[in-house]
Image (cartoon, rainbow, N blue to C red; front, side):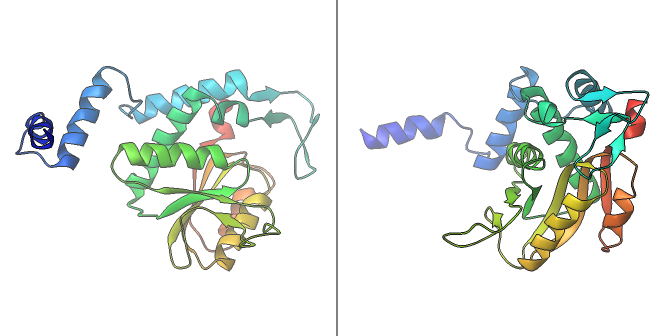
Length: 226
């Protein structure tokens, strides 16, 4: 009975294809029917993400009435979590970040940043990377080391010496991103690059990060919302 079951299972998959090849072929078929949100047109997906952010996460005023986390006042405000935690936002962000990683030829073991802004971006990227058969671990960097157990500040399947990409959802002064970088350095991780979902292009945020010596890449900037 067991042998017959095995024969039925093996006969359902062409013997000339490896498991990975068969899995990839199945994904392509599913993509045609829209079951997986695979990247087809990156520029179109960028436009879709900008539209989603404008609808759910963007506010503008003629006067600087919005107080930012940094304490600075601004004429515009982004509450990106309303987009990054949404189903369509997850799909678009995962595709865009993963495609950028491939474009740059980076091979990180993990990706993540300071909780909680970076968390949905890291999870979306990890999920997309798995679907593309190039898995990247999502990591979470706590604001402070936890006070029990391993006392660690970084959660996820990475260890000293592993290559990672540091993420942030929005950068203004760069303070949160720099804090994540310092935690990764302390843990002995090799930082390949810093990815910013949205650069506000004010208060020298990007420049402050670049002074640490790491390449910084922005998927979106404030110019996309003008």
